[in-house]
Image (cartoon, rainbow over all chains, first blue to last red; front, top):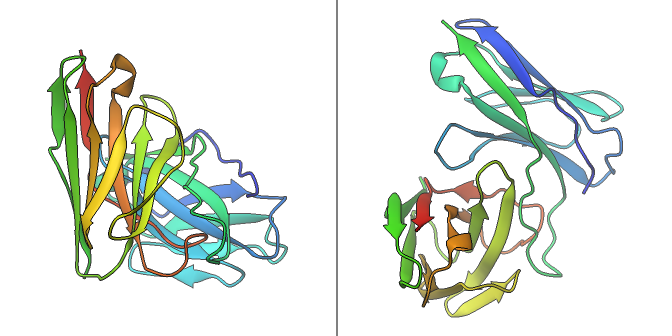
Length: 115
Length: 115
């Protein structure tokens, strides 16, 4: 799977939009961009994923550049409960052969929401 | 909707004692199930995965074993714990069928401390 690069930490004011960048310049055509987050002492939480088009769900929006070499996760109205480490990963599109591939998180971005 | 449960939430065990951690999933049938370990300050390590009752695959040689006695129940065990078994144990599930590139959903985790 392609490698990703994220800033180690970011601050955002409560109520503002949090924009978390991710670089994945070696991404392949069949790799999705996934975002997870992990709040302290909890299990990782799936946020969103996408291939080429921008995606939006109840938690966040994912903006993928046209060349797919980078993406931005947007939390539109950040709250204190959004303070967490956010992981951007790229994973090959689904297929059933060869056994499972475990998720591999890098260091992620520690997002701190300030009151 | 689907939910995943793990217990206990926290466990302190002496070296050499046995271990049994339980994970159950609700709201889905025949899920793929996974056990991960997350050591302090380190990434996720996939330990076991299962595509069905009685079907267990191990990713790394270790002191632990896993079993799946029922469709939505996954158990992590050890006969004799080692100090190095300390960590944060996470159970995850994914929809049946694909084993790669699928979205995995995590439980709340069990924090194990071996003394």
